[in-house]
Length: 133
Image 1 (cartoon, rainbow, N blue to C red):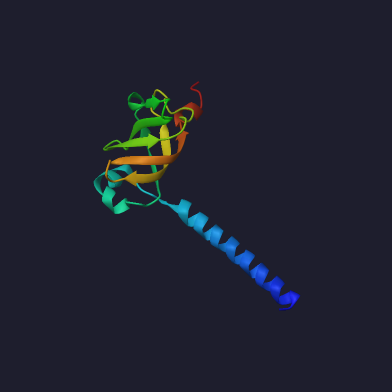
Image 2 (cartoon, helix red, strand yellow):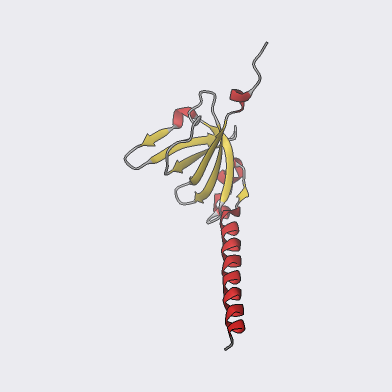
């Protein structure tokens, strides 16, 4: 085989590997957004899916286990509550007194009825509102 053929095959393998990694990486984190009510009522239909869920944190339900590095809490959409398990340190503002808005990414464990989050972000709109005059 000539050097040109070997080089072409090598480049083709590298480009194919990069394309595969990009496609598999995007599809693993693509997920789709689902509301809490739908997840609680139809959880079985989301088994194995990567999801994005948003809800208001119920501050009184926050439990931290430092030995397991496990955070448990509940979020609500005003109608239903969803238990969350997160194996990492709690983000800032999670225990906000008014109830922070949480953006959760992860998978729903249908057997336990728990959302296992691999990413927890908070949004606290009242903290950024303009001061009253």
